[in-house]
Length: 358
Image (cartoon, rainbow, N blue to C red; front, side, top):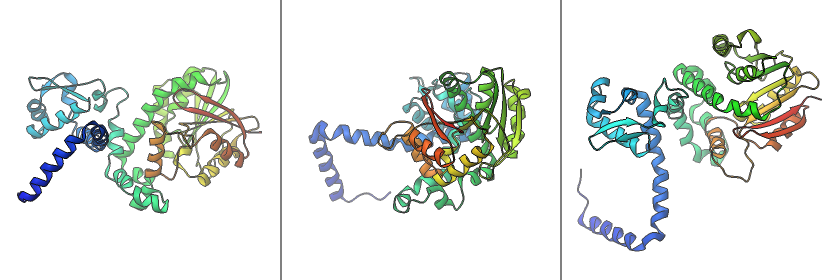
């Protein structure tokens, strides 16, 4: 490495002394920004860990970096440094004798851990997703969906072409649904009998939890052939397969499924207003009079900044054509499709926005 000229070294030393004399007025602000920029390191450390299954040997207890490296065929010094980095972010512990162990949060990096986040980490740190984030400056200028403009394709086409990423994404979405479902089930007055239709519900994770909580209900799952092929086994594992009809359908072109309640969980936030209108139009065409549509999403008021919904909205800006919306915006979209506004319920996890078929 080339040595800096003496004049540059002296300037840096003077600057350092000047900043030191500035005291606390500058320090906390700079420290906060430094902490925020460390987020890049955090997500990339997690990506390195899940891509190499770095923390899997630690599932059974503390080990040195050398022991981890030996089991995985990795470079011992690099392993030590990366595990030490994970310890900085509270995902691992480093003992004075050089052994590493996982924290309870760090265990979510394990693929087989209940509610594992490993698949989600692989997805959100994948090169194509990072590419979408990198185009946000251009999106600020032209408003074009960042991922689409950067890659020439949609995130859904990308996932279809990369089955490993799609599997991890789907698994993590399912785990997040299972975490939030009890709160949504407790918050809403679900009917004791009738039919619930999950539109675009994947393998039916939300539908299954509703049916488990209301034994008198039957279900319909509407989706594409791929998710439906995996749905039967999943629904059987949840003990509700005999109460669910699988219906192949298209969110935009329509489907044939009559029900008392329709679920749209984390569907509309992926699309712009025009596409949402088409989706809701498909549901309205299928829904009988008096049916209710439940839009299950994080609700974003325009002038309220809060985690995680405002960051999720930026994910939509970077990766999809959609956005997080307020209850009022969903009611407006529903009215355009022929629905009347219904109740708005805060479940403590998701908002539940009701649309009623008149």
